[in-house]
Length: 402
Length: 180
Image 1 (cartoon, one colour):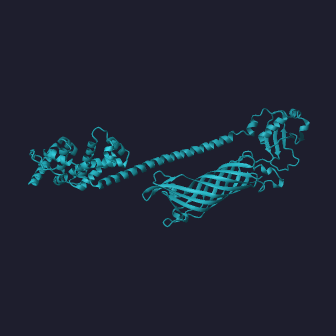
Image 2 (tube, each protein chain N blue to C red):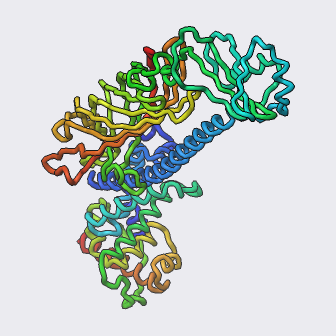
Image 3 (cartoon, chains in turn cyan, blue):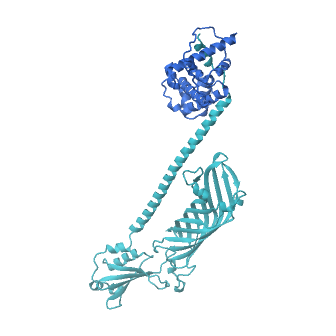
């Protein structure tokens, strides 16, 4: 055996084992590489998720607004129906054909005259339906320039079910006015009943109900805002909470009303994913409040299709505050203020159900006005100013007394 | 986990998936032999351990590049040798290759050679100049030709031959001293 072979044999013999520290060092480096790969992948996926979420929200909002807008625009109304009417009938010849007993003829001016058509009906109708009834009564298609539903209040005693008044002007019907003394299951029409003196006053309408909300909640502070950026190591996750409560409301004017709400559960949450003591964990903060809300409600739509815009304020009183980090829970009431207050804005669309019941879905936005973070031993309150906020879907079931 | 329960392909696949148990199987299967190679380059154990650690990190990082065009052991061995040479070069600033011995002629006789353990051979390896050590290992252990060694180490063929001869002569001299 020459020296080359002798040397190679010894070197390749593998008779000396490396110390375990070598394998430990290899593992440490592999772990570091794995963590950085995971972080890099997570950051990339967070960017993608945020983009997808942003597109989804934008698409949802666009579809919602478009659908509501199209529905509102395309809903048949009196103006559209009038536009389909045939050519106006010459008044003189047409009125002469009406039965004398079915109308009163009253000369208003030289150019206008009006007559009344009492129509027997069994319930209140919309403008569109009244027009159809009058048309039927006259047995001829008519063209009416304006339709008025008279909002004065009269006693139901001795009044015909429906009184339609046609005002004619020269060669066409100028306007149709009608009044009804029937009560609808709609708090905007409720004030039609009763004395004139009671028209439009508080408590002329009243309702109570239960309400539930599913909210996307936020605790707005620097940490939450930073966590929305893709290049941060702390991630802000969408957080949700549910609220349950009671409501009671009354009308103030024909369009304006007041509502008070009490929530026995009003939750605000915020969830993060972040590194804590070297571990990547979930950090969830939950604040539970009793909440009182006072809202004004304005009907921006019509009596037939009300659309309510609501605005007002709330005050919340803390029940409990909990923080869960990596599955470990702790109470943090001493880190947050007992009182939270702020503003609320919302939209509702009532859907009459059977009898006096109304189902009302809606959307609300809430913004706290005060800093709810009271500070810890290491973080003073002014370094982590936090406001509660939320956007929620609301569902209410109410009972109208009158 | 016993290594014989898993085929080489399964172990490689498991390592590519980042599974620690397969990585440990692979390490324990080849580490001892590769450690000997590192010792032959390093000349001391601390540097040899660093070489071995660095080499296996490269093995796990580059498993995706193994194309099964040769033996897996041969692929690992090449990484170990290249890593050892790189780290040996980085370990000192002295010039590795001394042209002074270019014309040395060395006896090629096959004298009886003692039975030595690696730990015993380490004593001689440590005494070899680094340049001669590298060339001798590449020629005698890895089977490189002087031309290949010259390309690998960016030296001339003549330098490779002279360094090899120097290493061999020194080993013979030391072995002769030892037997005496």
